[in-house]
Image (cartoon, rainbow, N blue to C red):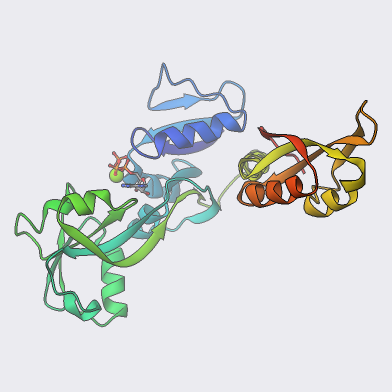
Length: 283
Ligand code: ATP
Ligand code: MG
């Protein structure tokens, strides 16, 4: 049975289980145990702290894991990144007290830097030829400068709000992370097929997340122009309306391009534009 390790609670737990549900794998949260079998898919879930996921995958206790790239990099176990999952985005940055006269990486020479990511920090310091002292802290790193444990910190940032409220300023963005699916690359044939099926479903779920279904009424005379604006998977669907000279046009657009396309379509006479979420796209 293919076993997947996911975070038991914390920032990645909810989106990891949401992704599994989205690809049709049932998860029973109410009776959550250390190990749980999906009732409708040959997958077993192993719930654990995110720190331990790279290790259990490398050792083979679980063949797969969902974890932040930051943990994969820091732990240094031999695992493959199978797929970037597009959630849990964050970065690990160096931050200094707001009042510090920061003038570039050399500022850190001889300073004490508090972090839970000593390995990633050491690599950056070495690459930049900087000698600094690393203070490993597992708890709230951001209070270290105020507590005089360190002169600066190297910590996870997503919006930057925590830094600001602790009187710190982000000065170097060192490592960019998101949740990834990892594997130890030692899958039995049957498990490999299960993984392929999961990847196929994840791909279509991720593609459909970025796209919207759009439909509108459009004058017959504008259909050709509208087809150029909305190329769709093959071409848009065009259906005649009861009203003479009008059509209904359906297509799929990238969310990032949606408002630009709507502006162009309105300019050629589109009316009654509807934009709908797409559940799945199977190319
Ligand atoms: P655990 O109890 O499992 O060890 P944790 O406290 O180490 O949990 P979380 O805070 O739940 O970890 O974060 C898990 C992962 O979420 C991080 O390793 C990182 O990849 C990602 N992440 C995304 N945004 C943030 C953020 N703002 N702060 C911390 N982690 C973030
Ligand atoms: Mg952790």
